[in-house]
Amino acid sequence: MGEAIWATWFDLPEAEAEAEAEDHLAWLHGTHLPAILSRPGFGWAATYRNSGGGAHMDKIADGLARPGEDEVPGGRDYVVLVGAPDVELFFNPRVDEVEVGLGGDRLNQRRGARSAVFIEQSYVAGPEMATRPRGGPTGPAIQFGSFRTKTTEDEWDLSAWYGQYRLPAMSAMTGCIATRKLVAVAGWVKHAVLYEFTSLQQRQEHFQGHESLALDQRVWTNKIINYTIHSPGSPVVGSRLWPPVAADAG
Image (cartoon, rainbow, N blue to C red; front, side):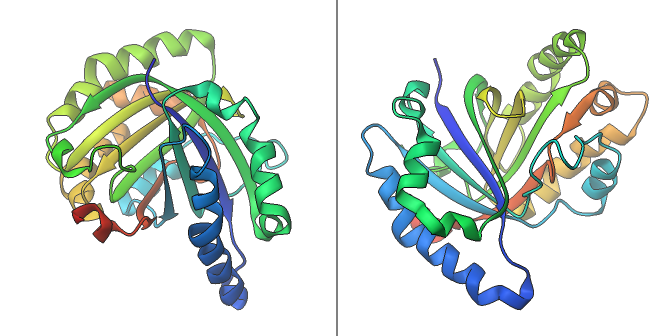
């Protein structure tokens, strides 16, 4: 079985409370995530800020189906990823309960928080895989989509699309470090895909045009976006806040 990932999406107070947001991030990176990573077996953690994927991605995102506002918490500005070699490490004990014990009132600063735990369905290395330190966190930039399908029949087509088309394309794409197709064992979503890039610029230059095929009704990718229901803010496109990207070179 491949690596397991625990993902948490959330917002922080708006601009008028910017100091509170910065304080939360300082606590998250200086105290909370180091405490999480001190638990036996936990491998790495990374925080990303959602900056959006540009005009073409915005057009795609505007057309995606979403759950009702009361169905799923709406956090989308930040995502924290934690990796472990065995999914059971997130459930014995339950990592969400561990986090509450460690975080206390600090977690109340978050808005619209939600979590999911995933296991790898498929994994492909990209041409830039050597740039990621062994055992290190996900890359300097990501695109992270999380969703369900409208019917169970759609899942057959979804897995075929990833296996026959998207994953082979990512394995040869300049700027791509790796791509993981994930399946949730806990959380609202059932499926996710995590693309890692050396930078947002590389993603924009080499992946954006490929992703924009979703707007062409003649191609398979367009079919996919019409039967998926994406979680709020999905896909997240952003740069890594922590660990600092410069640390990769060390």
